[in-house]
Image (tube, rainbow, N blue to C red; front, side, top):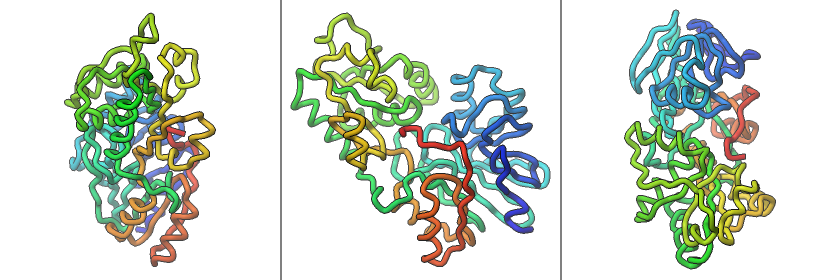
Length: 334
C-alpha cells in the first residue's frame, strides 16, 4: 500500500481512507481524530471525535459539552483499530493533551505531528520521536532565522525587568491556551512566588490545567479600582487585550509579548512591544531539522507553515519531501 493510499489531502483536511476518518479537519466530518485543542486544529460539529482526555476537556470548555455527537478519549500509547487502520497517540510536547497521531495500514506507518516542540514544557509531556515511513510535520518556524533561546533565559529577562521597574506593571501577552500556563509555570520554577494576575479570558483554562494536576500557584483576577494596585506585578493577558481599553487600568505598563515571532524585531516594533519574550510552543528551525534527522523517515510531508524552506532542506539532506499545502492552520500567537 502506498502512503498516498493511506493519508491524502481533501478539501476537509487530511483524510485516512483505510480508517475513513480525518485528522484535524477544517470542517465538520463524520469522524475526526484531533491532535490538540487549539481552535485551528480542534473544531466543533463533528459526528465523532477521538482525542486525549485533556483535549476533549479543552474542546468541551471552549465549545460546550455537545461540541460533537460522540467522543472517545484515548491515552498516549493506547492502540485502536478503526476500519483497516491502527492508530495511537504519542506526546507532541505542544500544549496540555497535545499528541502526534500514528497511523498504520498495509505495513506502512505514518506519523502526523500536529503542532509540536522539543523543548521541555512543565505543563505537558515531552515530544516522543516515533520511527515511521512517512513523517507529516508542521513548519510554522521553518526558516533558519528562527532559533529560539532557552525559555528560562527569557523568563529571567522578565524577572530582571520586574525588579528594575517596581513602579510599573508588566503586562505579558500570551495565548490563553498553553502559552499562558507555560509562562506561569516557568515563573514558578524560577522562584516567583507572588500572586500572578490573569485576564478573565484565561480563568477557566487555568482552572482546567489545575484539574489535570498542573499546579499554577496563586492566580488572581486582574481587576482593581486603582492603577497603583498593580505596580510591580505581573499580569498575563491574551494578545487581543493588549491594545484594548482593558489594558489602560495598569500602572505605566511594560508591554511584553511571549511568542516565537518576537525573534523578528520588526514584529515586536509593529506591536509596540517593549519587552519581547521569545518563547514558542512550536519547534524552531533546529528542532524541525534535527527531528527529521532523528526519525529518518522515508518521506517527509509538510502540512502548513514555511513548507518550501523545510522541503528544500530535506531534499538537500537526501529525504524525499513534499508540501501538502493544507489550509486553515495558523500560528495561535500571530
